[in-house]
Length: 395
Image (cartoon, rainbow, N blue to C red; front, side, top):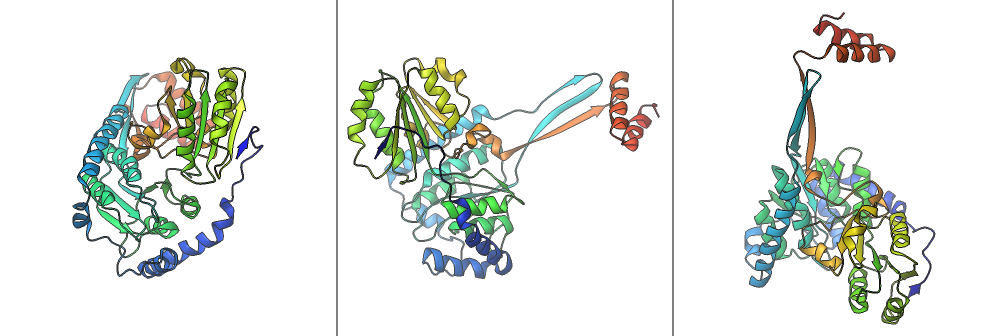
């Protein structure tokens, strides 16, 4: 279906599943492994003796050679990307104060890899590689147990994941957040998933780190007369593979391009929003308001517009297909949705690092000391002021 007008708001039925997810989390906290086994049988229809996958090595050997080669090649590309943006410890010295920041890795990370009817080993690459580059010492992963993909096991070995859990849904998130007899409690959970997974991440985020609330998928394409209509259609249909709730928008300055694209989309079971704009600048204004997960800037000289783009999770420039970012280019496919791109980016090595700041004052500037004491007393914290003053003979 085609719409030539954007919706005034996008429905979010997130809250409707919260009562169910709260019960799942409560059960896992109170009953541990017993609850996990019961929930897997109830929701994933699999009867398990243990939630730990103990055949990782055996399953990893079953991966087809061409897939193994593809994973190895992509693994190196993603590693290079995250190594290239990894921050370094930095500092300085001013007014008698030595200061700086130390980037410390999160100690324990749990990665949720969606599954069920399909397997998504690419998600394990996208979440696991930046964690490894950051120096996370313990990485764990969970994926629904109905059929463990050998590719997930192979990647688990490459990442040196401590344990792979046969767990899906909200129960996997609860187990990572609170721990059970078999599942290690982690410090941060990352990874996409269905609405139950995201609701669980939301609920446990009061006590544990999460990467964000992801989904459904979003794509905005800004195209001019230089864009190829066939490629535009394929990009739109590619993102539509994520499901009927996918939000897909084409903003184009070319009526000719729109006329070529529309007939190829009409029979799809999804709403495509197609808008004619006067200029690329107008399209970017709309784009920044939408704040989508993916942006395809399929225009001539796309780099000249980058400074004008404020809100987008990831940008594919020119004829670069958004799908290459989903798999192999380097940037992550775990990206902000629901307008979170206004204040958050996609998962990077930074998501697994903490900036620990420090200061060392041996002979600080006299005025800096007095300024700190004046401000402390203004706020009514006399002992703060005295604590500063006594160190430097300014009681």
